[in-house]
Length: 189
Image 1 (cartoon, rainbow, N blue to C red):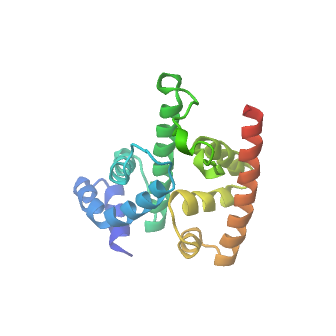
Image 2: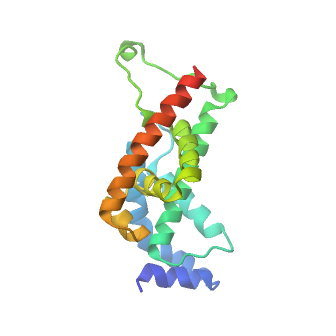
């Protein structure tokens, strides 16, 4: 049993001091995940990786009835918390009060700008929700690879499946999500 797992078990048992011990142990790993995710965001993002880590951590430890059965389970929950924070932030920015779907574009690069499917995190989240209904394990691979920035081997260990299966699910998911996001964007136009 790792230190993280021991502390998670202590938190589950109601040890409030254990919560203070957890952050220093997991902070660097969470910060790395957040920094990786933030590097995939559009330029001009107001949310910083440090803020993302702190917000995700607070959401994780504030839940009274939380039960993490392993280190991997904790990091899956952290990745999900980060994903939700980024989605909320994107929706907030898109709200009518903040300009709706309009985006600020520099005129000198307007003709050169090309948006990939990963730039629109809200469309990606909607497609990921559909994928979760269709193939939940494949969707979990996406959450861990894309939102948590984990490697194939790390995802394999967390989910208890082979690296080849993770590769296969990842390839399937990228194609499926790309198709869904394109379809969604065409319907909006």
